[in-house]
Image 1 (cartoon, rainbow, N blue to C red):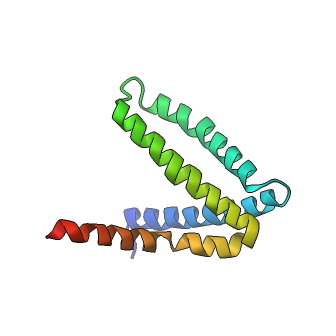
Image 2: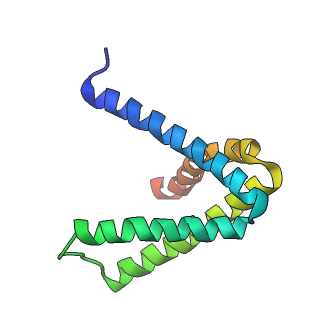
Length: 124
């Protein structure tokens, strides 16, 4: 029998899966007329419009952002979010949502392999 925290985890995982699939389908429909760059701009602007105000309200007044942390966040946003989504949206535009999402779904496997390879040097 699932306990409440486990059930919540299952519900959240199912919701995340459904929302990710919905995102891929919406992007496919959106890139029929617009391009991948249009989708990237819209998604990034929506994220900024939704999450920046929420973060500012949630953490007011102790933001705790240093120059180093701001730089790290900016780099993560540019490399991870912007470039990653640009390639993902372009792949949806070119080969479709199904194949693109299947490749994207293998990302945790690739991240695990890269992380494990990176820890080999730390073990010695």
